[in-house]
Image 1 (spheres, rainbow, N blue to C red):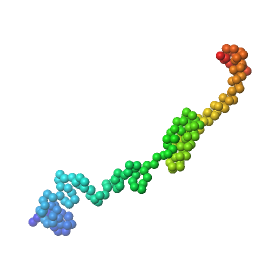
Image 2 (cartoon, rainbow, N blue to C red):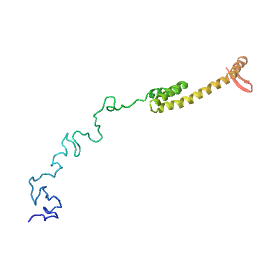
Image 3 (cartoon, rainbow, N blue to C red):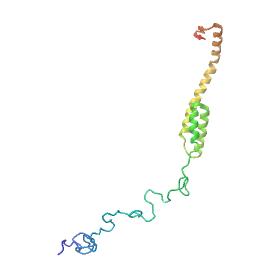
Image 4 (cartoon, rainbow, N blue to C red):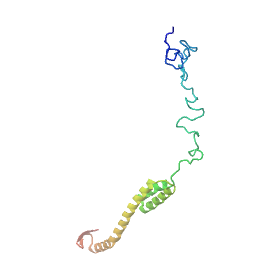
Length: 182
């Protein structure tokens, strides 16, 4: 009698529905290829898939997961029929506008507005241009207020200068205020 009693389907003692024994062949014991691994598994010491061969379930010539089926693409980026990465036409002007908004407020404000309009026409945003508009507007308002204050104070400054010429150097009183004349 065999070492393994017959299973429910006959054949060897395993629950294998095809009647194959531990060696992988039909019958009770023994195998036509002893030491041969089951189908789909590599033999001892061999890699699962030889170099250059597709993995299990992958068709020949099909790219691996995450790789493009079109290869490396074109120098400008993208693939045939696809636009490459677009560059924002107002980006550089937005940077210049932001810098000039701090130094020369009205000029930076105007350049930032132009940069934002260019970016919007291209369908892109431009945060630097928006920042340049905000900073340029604030600094322009401060500049206008300083000019108005200087214009309003000009007659008073002229009167004080004329008083100091007549009074001479030293500390004097002018309209209830103490004024230091050079």
